Length: 480
Image (cartoon, rainbow, N blue to C red; front, side, top):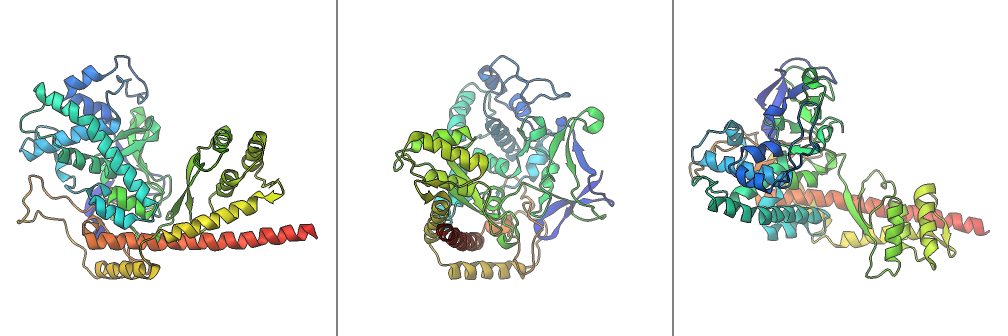
């Protein structure tokens, strides 16, 4: 054992090193038997007989490894199978049924995972208005609704066939809870065919916005003497007793808030961005079909989100803008322009007009329009965010949560959700799940995100204006 469970201040529970650990060392190695996989969920859940009838009969090797044999194709999406099993286990536990070996794990899961799925729909739309995060929130909510629509008739059929025990509700509330747990805890394993799993114990690791991009859990076939295992390798040396961190991915504070239920200070998050949506518009562009074909030739979709950051423009942004704003007179010019932009990286003149100048103008226009979409002023958001940070920073860290006498529950209340380590200092504090479950603090968290998004847009706007002046100055010099 190299990692121990401890209470880690505001972050709640976390895993700490039990001895000095060097960079690169395998901090944990979990066998397949300790993972809740979609295949295991399908086989162990009470609806297994029905799911078997829904399964295609030919084996699939999509998630097989040298140590895990091919399984039958899954009858439902991985997400849905895991949600079904979690909902069942939760219902059993609520009724006092602890027969499953996963009961201790389910008992420690939060009753409120803290994701955007718990936000009132009207509040979510009000808070996220003007932000690209509204698209993400809508996507998450739509995916959950689609999963429930898929599962509801199957649950009814299983109930009619007597497969679901009477003491297991399998209600929409249970499934909504399961979707929230999966959103915040499900792990995708590139080393095992991108399969999605739940990893008890390992999912107690907290996120650090400063963790190396490669510091994540993945399946290593050579681990455990060739038997394979879920492995985390240290991205830094750790002292004994120091909390060990993992990266949930290069996610902005808004993405972490919506999907994981905590919000690191946006100014301290190196992954903070504003996702600018670009698209070929068939409604206004008569060349939309040709541009879509030209983009496809270069492996690009007709709709694309690119992350604007304070540090500069993302690669390919200006080229993409140059193509979708161009108005070639003949079809072949569209394909020729795409080749020059995406293969050679040059911005040619098109009918005497500078395509780089056109792209920079369009970028400035889009930044101006985006800034106008926010429902509040920068000053109001700054004040709201600063007030919440001060209130949270001056509050002593809580210990493990206890069930409130006024709100009895069939499950023990969970520890605080994972949170970023980048708390404190001038950049603010991390708001954890307990914080953002409060609507006022949740509004303050989003206000802080809006402040940073505006700053990114303003910096991009100023940068594009400066670059546009340089392009025009160079054009004038060439004409002399």
